[in-house]
Length: 193
Image 1: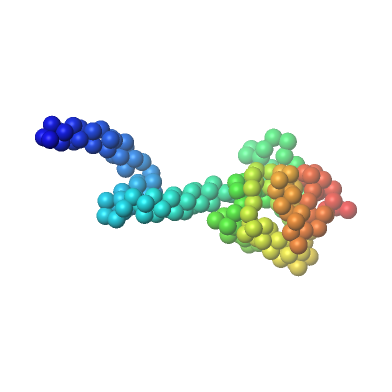
Image 2: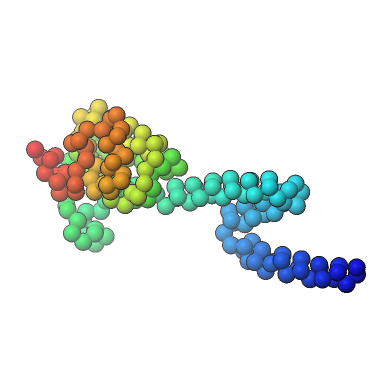
């Protein structure tokens, strides 16, 4: 029996992978927090509860990271930082670039568009070429912004929309076909018509 106890100690030591555990603790602070909370719940309560809590914490962490990578910013159409082939915006036109998934975790950033627009700008072009997916909250936020801008008598265009995102937008009650435009140049042509 003493020999079996020694074997079990060696097996338990090898299974613990303490080097991996220590390495994970040196990583990102949020990942380490999820690891420690899950470990603590495993030791104090049970493994089933720890897995459930760990999955929920990991889901929240994923949502936070996704919202952190979503950007909405005025597009640079002039100067050294402008993209090659970028169309120069005429006076009274504002171009915004959105990149990253547009979901409830990042929808507030999209609302900030309204604060960036002044009275002189009568046309707002929102370029969605780097938006891979959009959820109901993101869709609601776009609809709200379109409605607010149109109440201020501004023309709004959504350009460079991926087919899957365009399909979702077309199902919204606020959608009108003139909102979706193939690209920025087409939006500029329509804005001057």
